[in-house]
Image 1: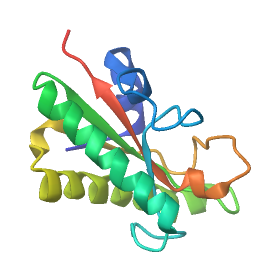
Image 2 (image 1 turned 90 degrees about the vertical axis):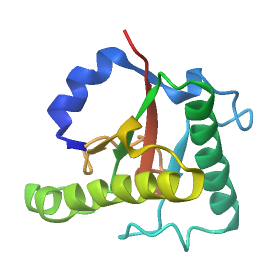
Image 3 (image 1 turned 90 degrees about the horizontal axis):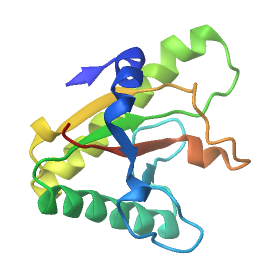
Length: 149
């Protein structure tokens, strides 16, 4: 199930950043996200350290869902803007970010047995960068917990 960015914004009332629910993976890591290779929705080619971190993140998200059957997860795809035009956003970044969310959801379903009905997919395009100097962190999928009312 894919929702637009505005719908996801309104859902934010029920969303808590995953970092609040999980122990940190290291003292510098404060949130759970998956990083992708440049200009693709591939999980390959991100480097050994990031591949290990991605695997740990998937495991933590799946564990959270197993331990909390009432939770759902918002899977929010992102892309790194290059030229910053609206044509780039609608023509490539938005579809790429949605595809990244789909790939992450497929991974959770296929390798961890997560029920797809518990995952809500969104694609933010390039509009919400981490504000970091490392552009690879903008090629990501972030996970947010949706708790029942």
